[in-house]
Length: 310
Image (tube, rainbow, N blue to C red; front, side, top):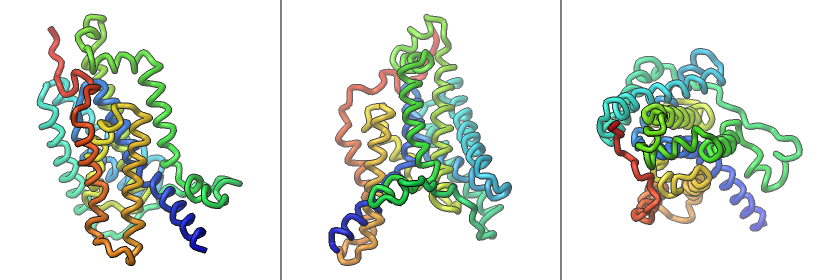
């Protein structure tokens, strides 16, 4: 009997790990594109909030999940254009602009939510879990791996696409060169600014999709600050993963495991662990990860440095 309970606990925890890691996967892989091109965007938190609100509001008014996801991506891309305007065209400090993006995302979504939705008390239909015949009902692995919605499985597609684009396409190879030797790219006749804009737009679009997951794939409601620091954790994931899409996926799963454990352990009152300590676990591990990788030498050489032609 104890073995069955233990297996059930493990299966539930593994299933929750992937679900809770999904927004981190989208946001961190998007940031991999941005940082590979030399642009440090610490405003992911604000972008995720905009994506979460845009997706929720669209589904609330139209009832279309597909349109909601599309608007979340569009909202993220719009934030990316704004970020690129200041950091790539105007060449403002990327840290300052990123901090402003976080404040903009938090303030704007809170204002719009209080103005139009706080009195409704209504939720929206979220992406349903897929029933995979013959797989979803398997003991242990069925619950852990085959009872998720399309947004969770979409993380696998994003990883595969990111690896292919960055390592098997001319665009990806040039984008990586922009983050290392932008002058060489410029001399070759390609626009450094254009590639950086492309990287930022991809990054912010994926971050917006990660935010939409919170309202359309995990819960059915928007609340102020729903990202809860996931944008900052995504930044740590990128560094810990050494700017690799595959690494970002697995490191996101690690942080998802911390989220899942703190939820599972809160349901075990016999452990007598204060719930505040359990809620802090993902953030404590973020700090630990940054300490462990503080001396990395494989950072893109031009990360955070505006490119000035000539």
